[in-house]
Amino acid sequence: MTMAATVSSPVRARDVMNTDVHFIDGMATAAEAALKMKNEHTTTLIVEKRHDDDAWAVVVSRDIIKGVLIDDRRSERVHIYEIMSKPVVTVPPDMDIRYVARLMERVGVRRVPVEEGGKLMGIVSQSDLILKGNLFG
Image (cartoon, rainbow, N blue to C red; front, top):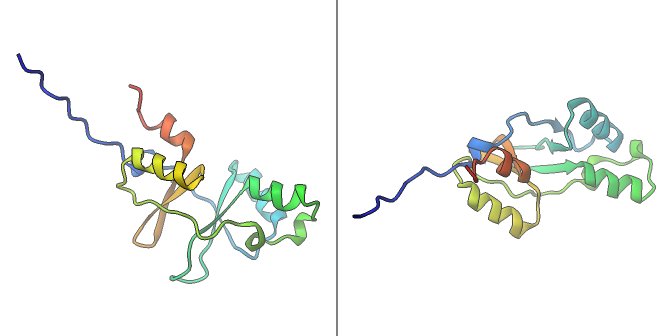
């Protein structure tokens, strides 16, 4: 008696990504970013590209904590471009989440934007991989 292998289709980045993405201009202040994060109930803002050939950037709550609170700077005097991470690693929407997880671990990030054809489609976070990935049944 042979046992047929169960073939299941892989879970892709598009299957688990959060499409509710919030943007901010790099010239905005940390105070504006913190207010936007509070109002939008998010800890991640994508920094708008200046032109088509520009790279994506991200500012997260930790950047504000490090660049403002810990450094004891005034949030209205710190610009996003001073504390953001740029460039950021992006993944294609069809990437298997196992590879997304490996990439995030190797690069040392907790979230990655999902990009296709230069357009940002969403963001995958570590928690999305577990909560939406159906990894454990």
